[in-house]
Length: 100
Image (cartoon, rainbow, N blue to C red; front, side, top):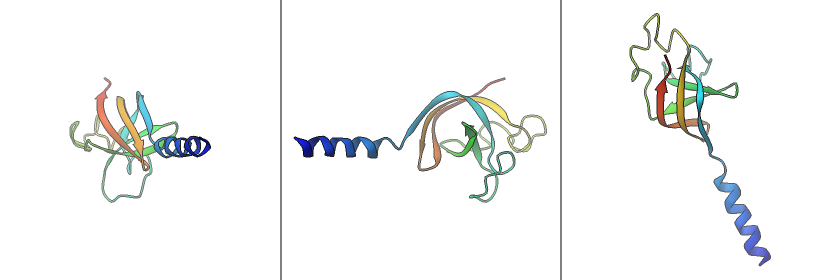
């Protein structure tokens, strides 16, 4: 019985590395606006609890021209309703809905 409890706790701990997110947050270019440098070029990113994460599942140009002076993610930080999970230091997006 004791081994079963320890095994259950280990399995639970290994599955808890995902952080489910469902909130309104900042969204922009990871390199231009959030200072991320682990990828070359411009890539979509979000900021959760003051930490930025690259986004998987959506591209930076999926919401219009990334370099548009007024709305482009390389030029401005916008707000979005997001849903997904943080896995291995990246945000795996299920949905992203821009606000405004």
